[in-house]
Length: 212
Image (tube, rainbow, N blue to C red; front, side, top):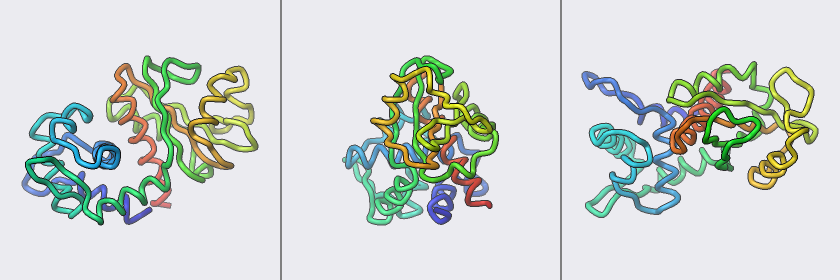
């Protein structure tokens, strides 16, 4: 995953003497996801889904092309073989996501859960995930580790979903966690931002793991 994160970081890096960018790794991840879901996308879709201005999207597309991850025409933007491979590798570590409404572990009106494979041992207090979600505009994030069929918060041995069987069933059915997987539930009062906040927290977790 080191090379994948490094490649995403190149897209999110500014090139001197350009101004600071208004997007980060989570926006890049979401842009790639939209291409995967739709096959071909327009800049207008990126503006709407990423909640960024036209100038920022223009720069994002330019950087994606510079890294040979996409091709573009008047009809839209689509993956190169390199871009498809990069996204496939990224998804192997974060294979499932789901949208949640208000729930017992959510902090906002909209909550988005994302699964990270086999990173339970890399979770500290959960503050890193919370801060990453807030940095991109979310309210916060709740981090769970799936161990012995229980959803544990960091440093706790009690199942956080023991009193919410409905939410537990939803997560098991939609995310299919395995032993030592991590589930991050990011929250916002905006559906699209909750999505980005979850991705931001997940990518922060993977980046911290790579540093170790």
